[in-house]
Length: 212
Image (spheres, rainbow, N blue to C red):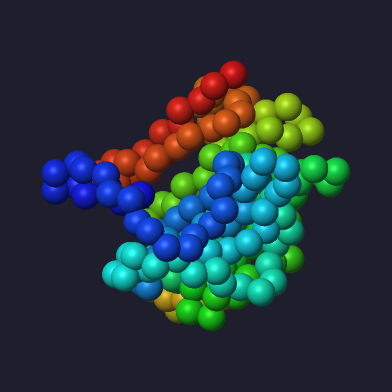
């Protein structure tokens, strides 16, 4: 379905697309003007497929012959400075909660896994992109700590060059990416699951909507 914001009317798009599912993740790739969807849960099984929706032609296409394993309740954001999708975590029946970080390149339609230290495995967490600083912020989720109220920061773009000058546009290599466990010196929300979040672009505030 497509919502026309000029008159707030919904229109259904025909053609072949992803199967019915829930608990998948979906982002908008501004560079290619495509929506990217990964994973989710169907009536009886988990999905590990990747689809793109071309918003200029209203066409779905299944892409990426390989990638992360089947899962649901993971989180994805679009890193607009580096034109790539970042995914973390998720749940797959019979397997530990995933603690890996993945990148999806919309230009080559390929996935890669980062070999970096980061948050423990979890699902139902919140993840947002800080466009001003080029960072990813992750909060809470369901884990072995039963919804640990942790806040993590993934440095997805560089802030300073070797000569000390500031930059917000240089490409950040995957090998340079790193998670940092933030110690917040104020009261945080209780550990939560099924977390929803947004980034307030005017004030750069991370605002979680949480449920105990």
